[in-house]
Image (cartoon, rainbow, N blue to C red):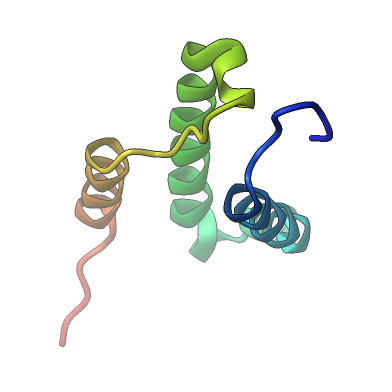
Length: 88
């Protein structure tokens, strides 16, 4: 991410936090039956982000391409609706 006119300090810090967190995720553990819904939701959110970056093209290098609000909210609502109900 070193290029002329690169991200400002805030964007660079955001990317560093994202990369740091992504490196800590152990995707092998996400195959456990209790975490499959988490893995599916994460994959859906990542797919949404990748689509946004692909749509932005080279502009993604100059401007932060965020998740937006509506699509991730829909993803999380669907994930919550899919989870099994437990007796309380």
